[in-house]
Structures are given as structure tokens and as C-alpha cells.
Image 1 (cartoon, rainbow, N blue to C red):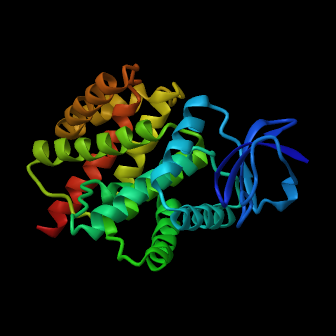
Image 2: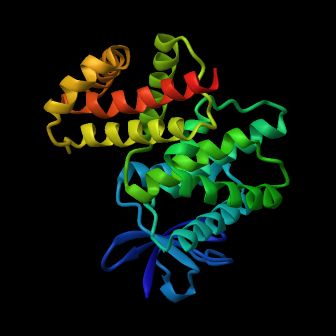
Length: 281
């Protein structure tokens, strides 16, 4: 048995748990007639999660003051479906972050406001599994709340999912995705070309940029490639110099050293794109 700390609404209760201290219990009618100090069986809850951070607890309580109970119920089911798809427990912060995000997204859609996501394709390329699940469940979510969710919103939901799966800060995931988009802009500007987003070489480049950023962030550096670096500098000077320009941007943004070996991999990716454009033209 658990002791009720606070009743947030008819379906959501905060209770004192022996092992986890305060937990959030969710279940239809779970909070009806309950008051602080009452005992409640944990088995009555359809779901429970722990918000260990005090700020997150306060954010969730604040959330329930302006978000309708029906919407909270849909979001809990949405997150259950996500966990089923991935066969993993998601970081509990998704209950706060994704609920808050989608609540305001639905309000904007209902008011006829558009949703612009300039990094949608880069997000899909970087996190294909999360994007596929987000696409499927966003359609289900739209039916539940009675609105058509635009494609751009799928990208934002993907980032929330990836953040919760990897226990990475959402703001960091978002910054890295935006950085990749900006790096692609620099590439197109310096090569004076528009890259075909359907080109397999573009897909490989974007995924490599994401992996490179993560490696640099966590200082998981690649092996030295000095011999190949000298060859590529001679054979592909334009792409080689561009690779260094991209590396300087990453170094400045991440405030981390970028290993010289990264120039080799970036040069090869860039040269493949250039060669493909030449074949077409």
C-alpha cells in the first residue's frame, strides 16, 4: 500500500513509495474521493512513473492545471504505445516535455497556425526508427484529439522520442539536429550546388555528421588517418578544405577538439556527392 501525497485529478495521484519516495500513479478514477494521507494500492494504477527531479515534479503538477484530463489520458496511452514499440522504458521526462509540446501544438493547429520545421528531413535521416514510430503514432494521436497533425510536427515528436530513449537532454538533441542542417547549408554554399535530398550519398553524409557530433561531444575519437589525409588533400583539395571549415564550425559550437582524422571521412563523403552531381550533369 502507498500513501496519497496529493490528488492531481481524478486519474492522477502523487503517492509516497517506500523505494522511490514520491511517484506519479495513473489510472481511471484512481484519485476520485481520495485525500492526502489515504492509503492506495499500487496495483490499482494502470501505470506509475518517478519524477526524481523536484523541478520536473513541479512542472508536471503545473501541467495538470491547464491540460484537460482527457488529453492527459491520451498522452499516457501514447507514451505506453511508444514503450511497447521500442520494448524499453522511456525517460520519465517525456511525460512533461512531450505532453506540454503536443498540447500547445494542438492548440496552434486548432487556431489555424502553421507549424514550420526546416530540419524535418535531417531529423528523419538521423533517427529513422524513431521517425517511423512517430509517424505511425502521430496519425493515431491525431484521430484521438480530432485534428490533423502536419508532417513538420513528426520531426519534433521524433526528437522527444530520441531524447527519452537515450536519456539525452532534448535541447542538446535539438541543437545537434540544427547544427547538421547548418553544416549542410555551408556545404551547398561552398560547393555552389543544391544537394539532391534523395541521393543515398546525402543520407550517408547526414548520418555521418550526426555520429561525428556525438563522438566529439563524448570525446570518443576515431583512429588516426594521417597517411590517407595527405593523399586526399592532394587529390580532392576543394572537399578537403571544406571538411576543415565544417570541423571548425563543430569545434566552435561544441567547444570540443575535433580530431584531424575527421577530415578524411568528411572529405570522402563530400567528394562522393560532388562526383554524383558531375555524373548527372
